[in-house]
Amino acid sequence: MADPFIVVTPVYEDKAAARQLLGELAAEFGQNMYAVVVDDGSVREPADASWLAEAGLPGAVITLARNVGHQRAIAVGMCYVAEHFPNLPLVTMDSDGEDVPSTIHALLAAMDGKADVIVAQRKSRVETRQFKFLYEVYKKLFKLLSGHAINFGNFALYSPAAVARLSRMAELWIHVAATVLSSKLRVRHVPLDRGRRYAGQSKMNFVGLVLHGFRGLMVFAEDVLVRVGIACGAIAALAMLGIATAVFLKLIGLSTPGWFSVIIGMLLLIMFQTGILTLTTLLLTGVMKGVLNVPPDYRYFVKAVYDTRR
Image (cartoon, rainbow, N blue to C red; front, side):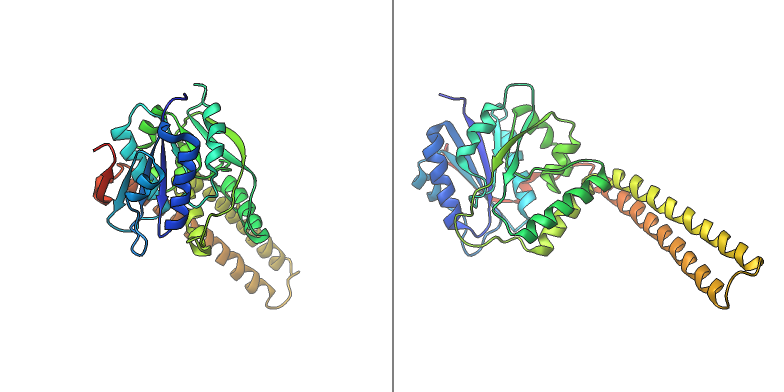
């Protein structure tokens, strides 16, 4: 029998999908795994301990006092595991079926001690063309602004040492994948296909996806500041060169009436805008550095815990 491990999955108003996921996990791994279901403040369909009993799985249901978002729900689950199961590897996955339970075998097989985190890199996606296009744009912008390539999501396997390290990083509460990149842990990619959603519709809308992308960049606030500063400096330098050129053409009489004032006004506006953008980025970086100093206590968000071991 393989070594035991933990599965953490966040659930928000998704009873049918979550119950099916637990059933498939039980069929694949039985008593060899322990499920941690993090109910992210559901009101209409709150997670219930009977789901674990129905699936025949040992585990725990963590009910949060309010909705904190997908990434924070995963952070709560990871911190809970770090405290109660410090010697077991951890798998994080979505509860909607797009992370296929049977592919966990591939993640476990890749954990050979030479990597701390095994992440699922998608070979195929069951998504619209618009989503795929926007996702590719996001990855390129992320690489441009942060200097890091992000090509994985929440489906990943973590060694006990990685769980201990990440649970002490405040960035984990903002964006899990970006925190893995910033943690300096050894990461291995395993190509896996993405599954189809079990039931219902995704709760994530366009605004939520955009915010999720921006939160990933917040983890690398200092890297973004450097790149934005360099870009703004280069644009300001070009604007100053343009102003000098316009003044020179005016002095030698080659400018048409009204042309000089329009060009100077536009170039000065560009210089002011780049300065404001640099200052704003600097201020936001300072704010983020203050926020990311100490991670919150996960118990603050927890309303109740039902553990089958008790």
